[in-house]
Image (cartoon, rainbow, N blue to C red; front, side):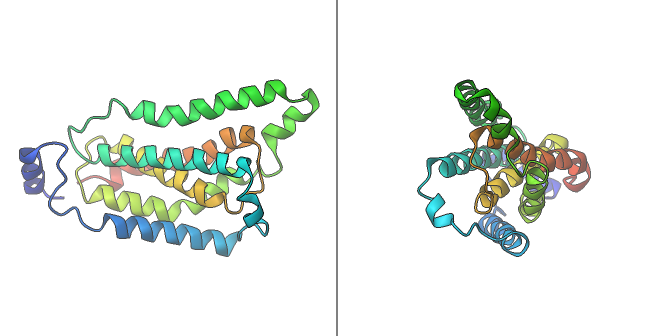
Length: 211
């Protein structure tokens, strides 16, 4: 975005979207579809997915991922506009994590000691975070394109927000393949998968988002 656009936007108010705010939904939809296609090509969908849709454990990991994806999207929008309010972002991002960690603590405290390791490690911990990060690539590109069309000023933080939002949305897509049903597993390894693109975003943000 050019300097004249920034001046016009600031004159209209920090929370007012710029006049060129078009194409967001196609970018998001395109990134989501591309991530879903990547899942289908690389991993496929669980053969018993319809059955799993009736299990609370499946919905727990999906709701956790979607809650963080929504919080990440709020962060992306706020950090794309100079002067926008960001005080509530730590709460939006932290509340789902705190909720799942507290739930995990309860689950572990009630589980038999010999089963606790399996609840945490599952059977896919070695590659689960990497797969989430890989599936997030199309969504990550979409988030960065959206932010580049606006005027982020805290470029490292903005890049991290783009990566985190993409990672969380990718985790929701990954639920269609993931065999893990332990909330303890999801609260750590899924989160790690979201933090990988967030770290990449923090590294590349100053270069990619510079305007």
